[in-house]
Length: 520
Image 1 (cartoon, rainbow, N blue to C red):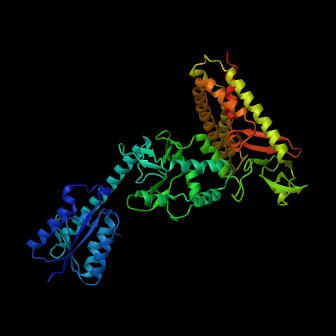
Image 2: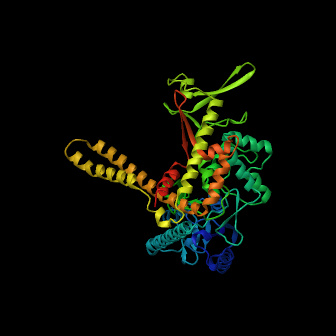
Image 3: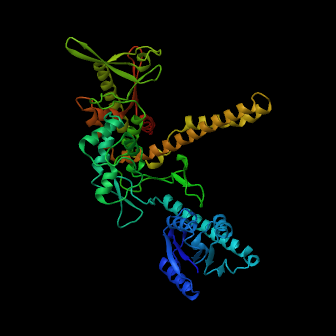
């Protein structure tokens, strides 16, 4: 008597979308074969939607466990590709494991039955068929990867699930649209970061407000979301950071961050950020690029934990000498709390000097310098001739950058001569070469950024009056507020004698405006 089972498998991801490969057709073919050969089928095993390149399949594993218990002695499949397309693993089962366990293997469309097969005739035929199936999988994998790459480069979203804050467009499969129910939450997270709260403080604030986490939102909307694992009931600093650093909220798609080792492996590895596929303006943004950049700058700095409202200058003050952050201190004097800042290195007793400055003095000086900066910028904008054409913005002075580029190119070229003359050794040659190439990359990026900035300025100056009114509104504020401060200023450096240097976000923009204002 034969105790037989049939094994069925289908995976559309591997290109198995031919109708004859459907589970229904496989079942029909195998049961008809069993009837014609007087074989009783005791059970069937089905892996639907499972890749052929792995043998770690739920029903396949169940079948092998029952074979080990001697429940079945015959396995019937439609063809070798249904059993598996991994050349090595397929051969291991058919030529070693099944014979050792006394299992008869039948592949109907391959006209193979291990009970009657001539070992000489099948010695090459089966391995060749397995190799062809393996190659087919490799070709499918190459085609799928190529298609996915093309879609990424066109700015089409190819993820299985939309990121938190977005939904897949019902009318356009690979396009994202804003989830209006979540938009205020994303905006709130970025606003709190700009106000000076730490990621942990933001998470605590959202938990106190009763805001649903991504997983809770997923359950409520009955939609699947990508990449948000962990606690379903509590926001965390890690979750906040993932939102703050995700450029998808600026309307930019960054895809291809992970890749599989090869078509046979399910393991994914990280891809270097420089190799990500980044396409801008693919969908509606929730926050602006400038807010995103400012929030990410603050993310790298030590700021308020959230026990009290963050200071106006949280994360912005630095010692001019040791470049460490300044820390806030309070002194109680005549029933009044006097706030001042000192160097954190000095505060820890690791050297440097106090660089102390009182809050009131700091506020007055910073407010004055910001007003001067805004007035100067407004003057430059007004001085730019209205008749300038777009080509003028692309002809700005790149001389310093170009000269630096030439300098490092010459240094790079002279390295081999120095090595040949014995001035430097091989290790020094490699070190200098790497250093100079990195310098050249940074200069190239600076040139590209300056050209991009010039193009942006051209667009802004088309509405010059509106821009001047915006600056006038900022300059007319009676009291300096946090949002205005972080929007305009990247850092404030404090010297020993209370000398202040403000580093503005728009310094490069002002530099180009100065050049354009002098064009006749």
